[in-house]
Image 1 (cartoon, rainbow, N blue to C red):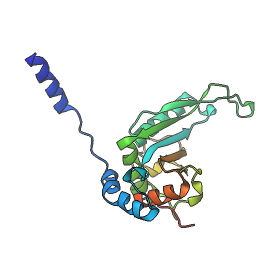
Image 2: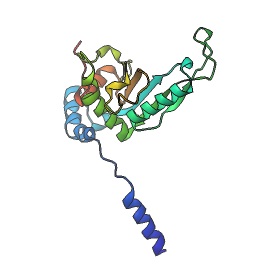
Image 3: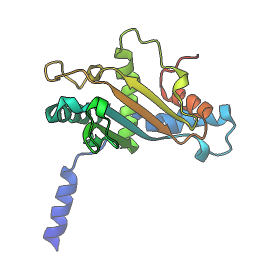
Image 4: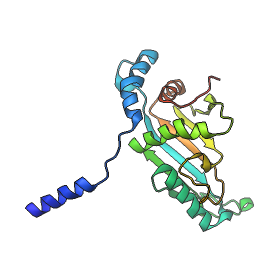
Length: 198
């Protein structure tokens, strides 16, 4: 029995320690208090949080399996999580797409991974975009979620110019627990998302 317990403790000590996101502390100490005051919430449980972040990258059926592998590699590097391949639901003859054919990849980030990615998006990635003037406030979906598109994966510092094979865009959807767009807008702005005023 002693050998088993020592083996378990040794394995636990060698496992990597996950760093708590910076935004979790900011939400708890600053954002939650400001939002309660501004929006008139009665409890901290009503304050919005980031539920998940979904990243979707279209590859296209004509690019082949190698392009899909490279897209999955880029998205794994960007998100820190292995994506899944997305398949076409219906056949579209004009685009030479067959039903159930692999046409892209997507990944869903939750918890600390979502907060780490959101922090990197706001502080590193978006400021790297040329002539960036802020994000439009018209991209909310009516239920407190925000969607944005990036034209290339090279704005992420993890992607090396030497290794990438083709410029690929992606859609990023930030899903919050807010019940309406106004609350989500106030929350995301306080969390650091660079939204324009109009």
